[in-house]
Image 1 (tube, one colour):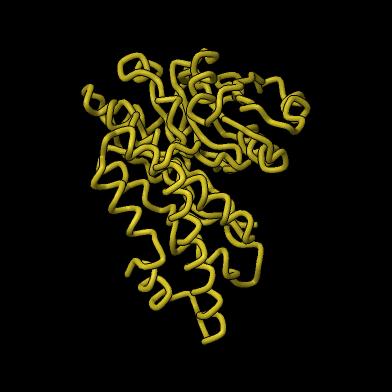
Image 2 (cartoon, rainbow, N blue to C red):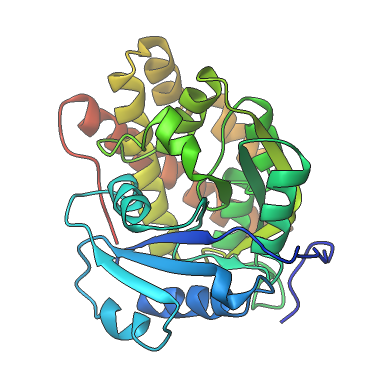
Length: 311
């Protein structure tokens, strides 16, 4: 399988910085295995980085997955949420550089090399790297993959950086950034990466984008995968808005993701990847169902229910 994106070759100086890669994980053993394989194949000198897998209360056997590589450190965090797990990984790390990715992501072989190079060359404190979908395993995208690509575009890290935000699927920064800005807000279930980046920039830290530090994310190709993401994101985002007292945004987003939103209608009507009447109808059923699920999750959280955790 050929990964998309332009190739990048990043030279490493004689004495590279030591990097700690933090990977929060909850179940999804097969995806974690692929992530660790990709991290083991980095062009960055093997003796100059460690991988810390933080088991966020999994029910599957993560320790055995981590046991085969001396460069992988396994720790546990029983507190709910990936941000709590990331904080535990940062505390357990020893690198002067912290790199963040997710257990279902596949970093390119030059990810660390390019990220550390740009962290230095761009004279910044935080690098937000490029995130791309993996090529589909199907001859053409199925209805769920089309929906994900239309609704949850990954290729926006450069836009996020422009507005002082990042996605933690691909962040490389100095350890001192967390000393200055603090750790992630472990009580959040979504947008904790944005909240931390906003806080870091407010403290005077410089955030820049790297097109060469690439991480790939697998496509969600089943109804279950899409549903889990919808429920986690909708509830987590609503929780964030309410805790930040962003009342207007909470109401606006509740409306904008609901079945009566013109945005949903526009998505169904104009999605360019849909061909044929039958497929358009199938896409519409999925889109409106997902918007209904999102609305229900937002209302639940607004009424004090916990955010859906999923896998």
